[in-house]
Image (cartoon, rainbow, N blue to C red; front, top):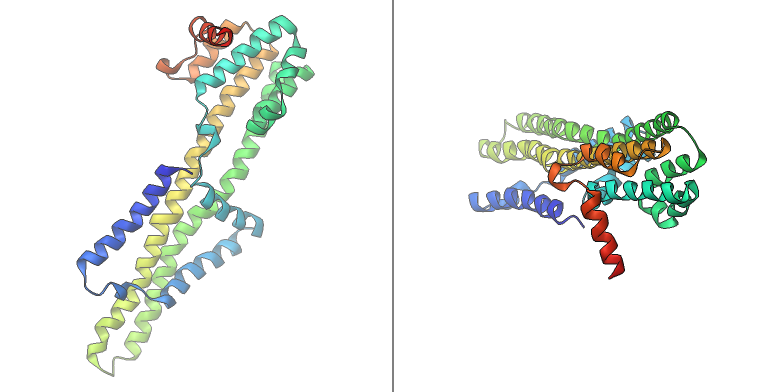
Length: 273
């Protein structure tokens, strides 16, 4: 569970509810089920109309996934550099057979992209060929991922529009009853405006923030894929481990860079201990 996302999400609703409760002694005036139906129902309908059913369903799964920890943010880039540097030493010592032994089932479960790229190196493709294949794979995966966040962004744009639609419906009903009791105009106006309130809340507290969160996560994945791809190309070109270290460290902040003389010796000492 991503604690930060959950706390921020709950905090947003707590802020809105808290402001209502402290500002009025009639908080139930903000509850109107027909308005909820117009906003949520209309937003869902446009989502399923605009996207294929499987893509729309994936968008809702993405909303839930935003509250979970994201695996590509769990492993520091320094560790990715270190792994590929170690693979460089393994290839120097044992050839491509040594790298093949590193592509375990655990690695395939952890990073499909890296395992697939390592398979390409073992197969014997050139660095240029591996770059072309992995670039296409990364771009294709990114495009598939962004469909769901695009659907969430569209829902964020549609929700306020349906809120306004509900407000217009409420205003029409209110105006048609103006020949009656003038005292009913105020409450009727409040009900008419409540759908706009729901639309803004759905857009700005749910759809758009969660889509932005997942887009940021996908950017992390794209960046990590670029680092891994560059490392795999260098392995295919039989570059030295120290060259691989220096090239891949350009992806990492200076304070977090992997250094062979420091980090490899530390790991060796830990293994011996």
